[in-house]
Image 1: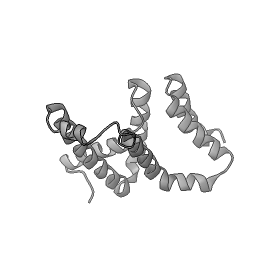
Image 2: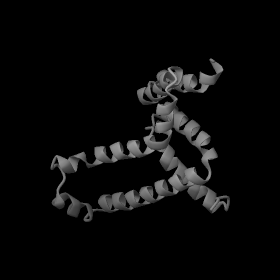
Image 3: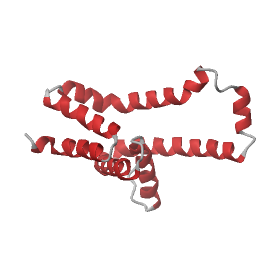
Image 4: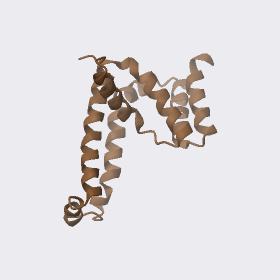
Length: 152
């Protein structure tokens, strides 16, 4: 039984060792769900957690609009500075890459293992933030396309 849970235990330990509570809590939560045999919840999470995570991430980004901390004037000012224009271009590029990442994950689900390992390493060693798998999938899709290794 310990071997079945070894990867989640290792990921949780890495999160704890490198003081990244999000990684530790994520792995720990999945481990608990697995140990108490809530397979239906795990399957539901597999199907919908990405959508829910993206929804909550988008909500977090849009909260300043709801709190009236950002208005039309601020949006207009964005297009009047190099930093603002670069932020818009970067946002478009990131959204496109993440879309390509979703496609890659559907077409080549075997890349998930590498993305998860890379994300855990980046979060643990480089103090990154675990929103990386989708962006990493997009970056991987772009690299595969450049190298002519992508599947259609």
